[in-house]
Length: 635
Image (tube, rainbow, N blue to C red; front, side, top):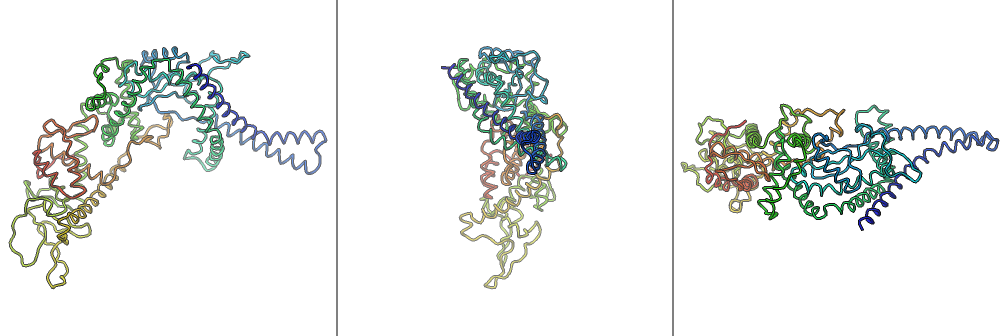
């Protein structure tokens, strides 16, 4: 049944390849048609059959049209043939750097009875595929003296194109065992068999050439004449692509079906287990990039051992979720990264490429783009990130004229404290349960905030100036009954105090104002940060489109505010309670209090940011021994 399935898939792929080539032949016929008509008319005139004024005009028109169409077709053909097809950015692995890996792949190809891949490369993603790089711009020409292994009945000796390059996901090498990697690569390597067929190879070259021609038409920075010419070529290429798109897709589906059927005979039982590890590796890789690597990338540092971090993250995930009973015995087998001579060097190269693809970082290290080891991550990334965010938060508060709180520090001190943030985001005097200090009687009702209790301050709306320390809030207009209106901002009614509606509305206004200011400040910082770019001459993809695969959409203003307030809390915990920054392999930066991860901090910060209620956070600070009134060291 396997042989029947392989033959059926190969025949389907070949028939679709011929359909693609027929579209190429039809395009050529259309280009030659005006010239052929002109030749017929000229031949008829020379033999005396097509004579007269009408035929003379027709000969002239068709001759000119034929020349123009041939010139245009020649330009299109030249662009399609010379345009450089897209190449996936990868880390090339020379045979000297991984002889065991090359030996395993060749042995696998022999077992599958297919040509071995011409080279091996790594991609910082959880996927593997074959990539044709036979274009002259991609490397040296194919080796001389190789005859076609699928020669026709007439004994044709056409040279076989170079075998495609095997691209392997780098997380697979570090997480999978050698047997699991071989089982995963079996259906991929089996695809070199159909790729060697001349019709399939020619159809693929034609489709890649059309795709490259379309890309040439969208290249910026050309002169107007060249831009118009390239746009015309791209339009023709796009028209032919639409015609052969379905055939090309079905051709690739037939190739994949034939390769999958052929690989059934190799490590079939192990392939089931290996596919489970593929899903697990993808989950761990995604968590590592979004939770651990992304915070470092955003501050100009890139973890240099991402693939090794995948192993740590997946080990932690398996320990927490108890994914497999024989997990420990599996880790005792030989890992696939042992097939590399210097796995650390290759891991570093793959990590830098991952930062480039998923974040848009520079192609080389520099003062603002330095590698970081996992041992240095808590101090170099986590602690520094928190202090940078806390410093930005206080700069924005200073720009908004928010006063510093008075507590254990001197009255004229301007040291940054967590209490300042809590006071500003607290929305109502009913937020904190402790009562305000007693004050002398006042004939007029006065609801201005007491200076001695900053946490009970009622936050003024954004369009109302708040009273500063030592000042009196402006008097309001006379009330309807002749009494003086309360000083300061209008107090919420009894119902809003009971239900918290007024407090929530004011907190939302204060939070939105601060969040918008933080967003603007962060945008200004990112705009002034200059990053060295790669060299377009040697980079096989468009630098202007980086990152190619952004991990997350831009953070909202509310998320930025939550991150900055959390950073301020963590800085206060480190400086006043002896807490330490930590790294959680699945959740990223974490705060360690007495060696335990503080996992309950986020909901309390959200209560402050979204509802203006600091009570849950203040209670947590008291339990953790954190002093919000103490100054915090910033960067």
